[in-house]
Image (cartoon, rainbow, N blue to C red; front, side, top):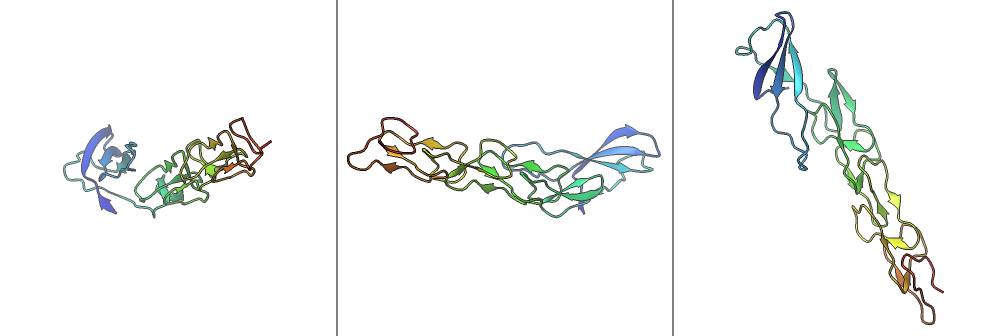
Length: 171
């Protein structure tokens, strides 16, 4: 357990006073607000003498109703002191429960939404040359990508052409 930084009285009776605990800063690096954990401290009418603590779960889990639960696919927890799991960003995914981080979509694939469990393959005529992309790029005129999940387009061979963008063959 870790100590709370600040404690504030949120009301309640003497038998069940509700206190909020401001946790040490835990950011996801994306400016996402993290929830404040609300603790029940029975029998306290003042916070001045109360020393509160909170339970930690293993990374990849969230704390729900006093129990640790694995993060669902498409979400993660890099620390164990969250009451929610964070969504994977577009361009990334978490294919298993209990993820501690999201993986970037591999080359040839893309992720156009948050909380993805897997990435989509680029269609024939498109490519994704790097990892972590949210869209695929169409092959330019004079080139093609025959297979889905391509990482590059190929130039049409001598004597063949392709006037359209996003082609899967040459004429």
